[in-house]
Image 1 (cartoon, rainbow, N blue to C red):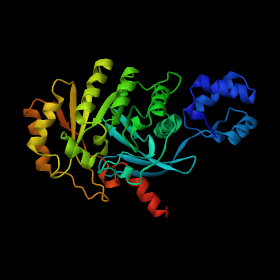
Image 2 (image 1 turned 30 degrees about the horizontal axis):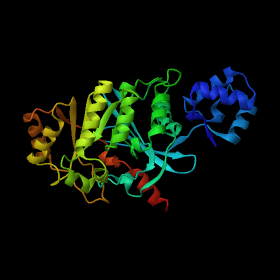
Image 3 (image 1 turned 180 degrees about the horizontal axis):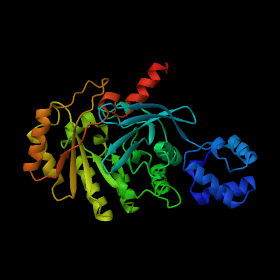
Length: 347
């Protein structure tokens, strides 16, 4: 099946005109509906005969919202999306003063094996296509009741490792920022990686000015390997050097995500090593207490330890702030809603 949301406007026009014998302006109408997350029945100005023909060969909306949870604490919404093959992925909409940020998934499951993440518990099922990633944004954006840009910022930090699905993620970025589509500036997009070094370099060479976020979580190689198996392939030094290269190529400051796990990475020695590792890099550190995932048995650090760790970083000259923990009452961590939904439905 062809996923229409995989296509740019020009690709869609070529596909529609070549295969269905209609004029290019009709393809333009369809493209407009796709960006409103409309299925074939909703494309009211498109001939029914064409819609019926497309329905046999194509998928219009690649990711449909099948469940929504809303936080009573902070207004965060968590979405469960169903893909055309029945697989499930998640997204989280977080509301800030500057706009709405949607966290999207790039894979069904994940093979990175990070010990604190629910999305990796069942391994990698498959990669998402560019259109399946985009469709998550379009589906939530359509909830904006006529607002052209209800989703103002996008974060690739949901289920999956974006740089493990490199080609589809890059095409997604191009589709998202396409002036004919949503036209979201890549400066409003953050891409989070556990540190796949060669693909950080590839992304830098493409000069796509996204905000690169490195999920570091421990500055000591031997300790990081225990919670993040990617450390067996690439050292923290290699990951940070790749980030330096990304900054040199794009001019975009690096964000380091540092999740505090009780008794594992929250000491002064960790802060000192982190400051040494990041010295000379244009970087900001986001510190957050672990959003608990019951299957892992890991616990977030205490409030006292979190504040103390931030004080350490400040005294060591690192730019660092506490990232808000959002959606805890709706199991905001990656993979939790999908896992619970599948368990409830006997999968």
